[in-house]
Length: 160
Image (tube, rainbow, N blue to C red; front, top):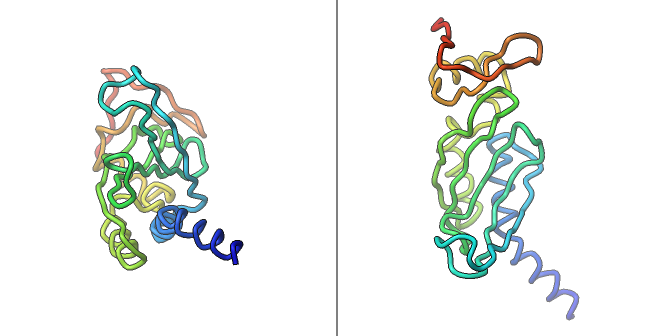
């Protein structure tokens, strides 16, 4: 009986991760992992002493979805962005959302699909369209097969 209670407690404790994995999966992202960092006293004045920061990311180092608790310490409100260094882009703007259960995870994923879907940067045609619409996110310019260079103030981009 104690083993069953432990399993149930484990599932309840991991419920935010389970719901966020469902949310990410609807957006085309897989492999969402949970990370926690404790902020030591005196490091940052914006949080109480020993605050635990929880965030979630997919596993690719240069193209991933990041989800942060907002504010830290609760498991209802979040903000998410795409980090696409692989494509020479700065992280996208943070998108706020709330997840309470499976239904809200599906609804919020549908609402945020135009801005957080993996396919908007994964496929070349949609990536070109995204870059045309979000030029302020570019920090490196593609110059050849898998080759980028950092932008200078003199770089210009074609608008077609």
